[in-house]
Image (cartoon, rainbow, N blue to C red; front, side, top):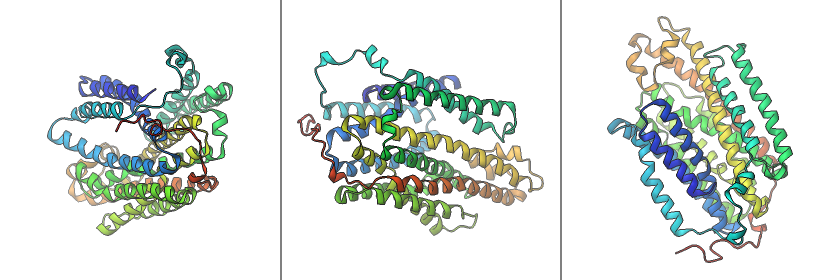
Length: 443
């Protein structure tokens, strides 16, 4: 699906969400927007691939990753401001003018190189036949079953409940079917075995899973810590999360420039895993009395590590693969990173919910279920003052224990990182002309 179609789905989904009269309509709109947004980042990477020589790509991909970091902070801040001052619907409506400007900008300034005569292009039926419908039909229920099991197990139902066991069985069956279909469909599969068997691809994909798990879990739960334990508002918690994001943005651009200058990316990926592990470990030491220098410094250290590693696996895959395989390799990495984040945010939710229930049992006069249902920003208003400190201590313990999952995944990322081959972007000369070489980018 091309970039205009991706934006089309995003815009349509945002329009439905902004006008949604019911929660069902909101869910449908979010699904449509998700279909579109899933392809936008990878298509942005492919624009860089088609426009910039290999040696210069790390710099531009680093800038792209930096903008991703900026948007991850600006988005929640704008959303909080819209919700507080206007209406939550503008969290979705804002995508309409911004998306239109983006589509017009890309359409005007970028024209991709043509790969043959328009007459030789496959029809939409031919393009649909190349889509892995069987694989998708197995992958989606597998992931949905896993996410539901992780969300319900231990909180809504015990792990031994037939519903949880059934969901895990469904997940296992569909995963096995998905693997078999990928092997059967070869190069037409969602994850072609020929490409995944490349050492750079599978090691970078494994790193991306671990990175996404560690990074997105902290991005989700650190603002909750600021809102609940620190007493910050939703908007202020986003501001207090800036040290991590600024570290990511600055080091992402720095890493891209360094690789463009020196050529090698593997050392920085290894350093990324090490710094993320240390930073996440230090974050687990947060307490009610933690001072501002520690709050800033520990986040910044983790952000520096994340900035070094967020985009370099994409550079590694582009260096290792032939030009015609780069889109698939990029899609595999984006799938891996998103999947790691989606699954382990649910793992974190499971750990947090169960740990909070355990910690609150020791607080006299508190109903654990009632406290668990209170929003983070309302905790100080709805919990009686005589037990508030004990509840905040329990919240802090539950959240920091949840962050150990991030520590573990960041440390685990070091294993695939050391398997990434030491190749240089300077050593790849594809000879394939870019859009700039063909004079197809309007200036």
